Image 1 (cartoon, rainbow, N blue to C red):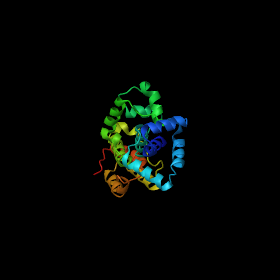
Image 2 (image 1 turned 180 degrees about the vertical axis):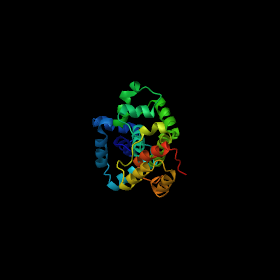
Image 3 (image 1 turned 90 degrees about the vertical axis):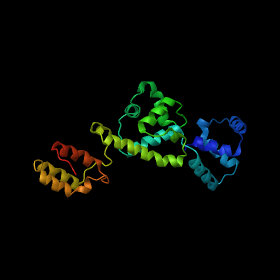
Image 4 (image 1 turned 120 degrees about the vertical axis):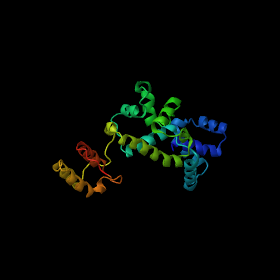
Length: 236
């Protein structure tokens, strides 16, 4: 949630719409600029305890969705956690919106990523992201507490789709950058016995835990799998 969202929510508890508008004018306040100040004023004006504030924050998470820009950034953070990599904002945009021209959206894209006060009103962009990441449009209006459960699953599935395509391995970064001594030993042993299929089979069977989905170091897999495929070795 954002300060803007919190300020408007609390104000809605104590003001009618026109009263809130008048309150901001009288105090020379603008929600996009002064959200945190509005929160402080409301806390003092209505003597709101920390317990009351905590209950409001919990209610926002339970009943209100994240602003679309905040949800977009949360999606991007989750994609990064699962291994998606980009060097520039333009590259990230092209990954998420391959059918869009970055030059047409450069200014908006930078605002969406940095200013949660800037909402995403472009329906075409929203639909494109829904199709690219394969999620239902209802997610935009789903309460934040549920969004935080759904989005990681969406991100994981998207990245896994790229993991299954060899031509997209360059989009992935290892979750850990270093290969352990044990992993390096397996790589070296397989390289030394590259012509001996039975020995490779023995080495792999003795190190199966390094090849499972639970293995944490993707860098090891990205190193070893091409070697095995080059020898037409298939792990069963």
